[in-house]
Amino acid sequence: MTRELRRARRRQAPEGILVTDAMTGEVVGRVGNLSETGMLMMSSTDLVEDALYQLRFALIDDAGQERTLELGAHLLWSDGASAPGQAWTGFRFIGLSAEQARQLRNWVDAPGSHYA
Image (cartoon, rainbow, N blue to C red):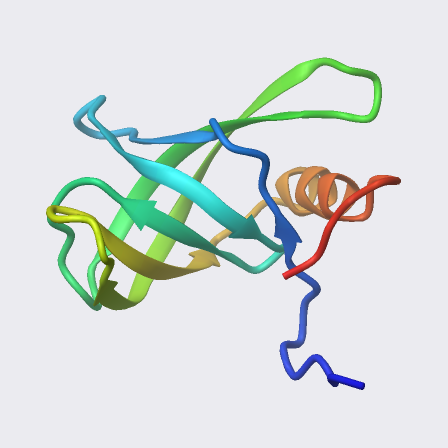
């Protein structure tokens, strides 16, 4: 049996959750997995480790409505992927409001979720 060592459970994202840099409007990647406290993202652009970003992405809530989240994120690490020009990146969310944390928690805990 594998024991999860992360503090927050991470839900695998279905393909297609695009992440946009809210400051430039540029799509910077796709969500790999997501928790209430951070995310794994497949980056399609060069990002700077230990930098702060304002990111935007949309999730479908339990009522089937698309909800856009815009939040601060600290890029903790980056590791080259097998595809040229792409990298796996790990973010920690910062400065979340209680409502944003609730939306993330509800999405992660939704029935039928698959966990990383």
